[in-house]
Image (cartoon, rainbow, N blue to C red; front, side, top):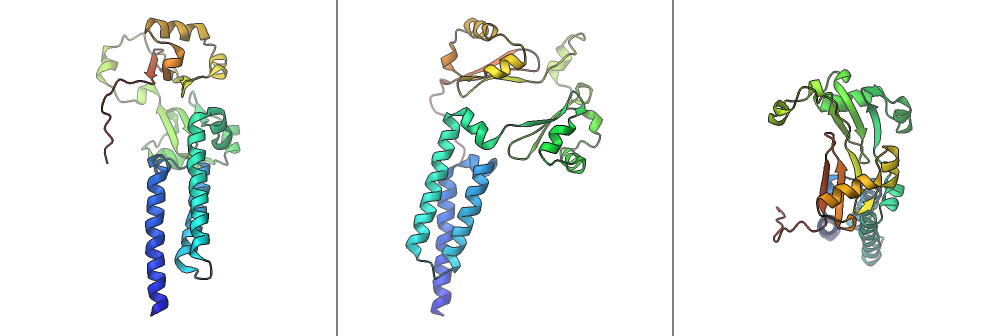
Length: 237
């Protein structure tokens, strides 16, 4: 009976500790699990299981191990926010699987993606005809992001106000992320840095003030500043 009570207490304690760790690591870890989040989850799960059932291992040793991996994951998540190149090296980048309606077989092979799995993910997005897809990207968390061809997209009020001649749309191009200018993206898409700076100047902004900038599918520039001038941000609990 005593052993059962000890296991009960240790199991409940392990559950509470993991809940606190998940809370500390933040919502992003839960919503978009990347490589380091996956590794952390597996290791913490194994340690918590030993904490609950393995009486041969001292509690202090398990707590030290949990603390080390939790702190390591927390520090790594902060480094990923600060250094984009480090983030790209550790997590990789999204992979284009369909571009302009054409399937990129080489990119699918690199990600061990089969047509069956691609079609399965498309069906989950209520797309049963692959011919309806203009772009499809495999995100770093393994999820598929899809843009349908224009004739398959839902019509909005804004679309009804557009001229019939404005049919050509491009894929959104990210130019600034986390305040860092993406020079490789600018070169690859033949976008002069002077154009970006001039667009920012028209808006009365400097590059160092910009947190995120993307050239949208309509060719217009969307800019988000570091300072959003929101006095009381609301976080819905």
